[in-house]
Image 1 (cartoon, one colour):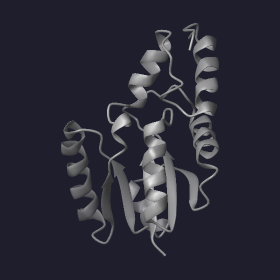
Image 2 (cartoon, rainbow, N blue to C red; image 1 turned 90 degrees about the horizontal axis):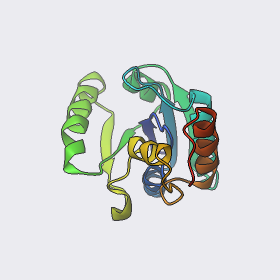
Image 3 (cartoon, one colour; image 1 turned 180 degrees about the vertical axis):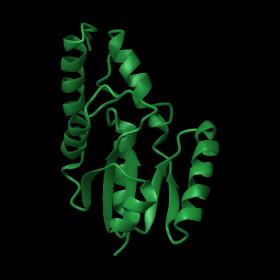
Amino acid sequence: MKTAIYPGTFDPITRGHLDIVKRAAQLFDRVIVAVSTNPQKDPLFSLEERKRLVEQTVQELPNVEVDVFYELLVSYAQRKKADVIIRGLRAVSDFEYEFQMALVNRKLAPDLVTVYLMPGEKYTYLNSTIVKEVARLGGQVDCFLPPPVVELLKQKLKSFGKGTDS
C-alpha cells in the first residue's frame, strides 16, 4: 500500500489544492493531507479551522484523510509510514524552492520520494494569498474556493471589518 502525504498550510484550501489532492488520490492508495503551521506565515484561519475546511472539502474521497502536524515533515512522514511527499507546482517560479526542499528531505530521509503534481491549467495562477487579497478587496472568490471555504472566509473577513461582497 502506497501512502502519500500532501503537506501545506492550506490557509485556506483552494480549488487548486483540491485538484492536486484528487490527482494524488488516483495515484496512491492512501493520501494524507497534512495541515501544518508555518512560523513564516500569519494565517487568517486557525489550525483547527483549516483542518475542518480541508476535511469538508475532501470528504467524498474515500482514500484521503486529514491530519495536522507540528514536526519536521520527514519525521512526520516516517511516523505515518509514508512513501511519498506530494508537492504542487504551479509555475517555474515554484520549482527552485521545491527542488531545494526535496533535496534536503532526501538527505534526511533517503527512502522518502518527492512527487510533483501540477494542477489543471485553470488553477496554475492560484494561491491562498492571492485569494485572500481578492476577498479582502471585495472581489468574487467563489470560483477559487470550495463552497465551505467561501462561507467561512466571508464570515472571517466581516469579523475583521474587511467585508467582502463576493
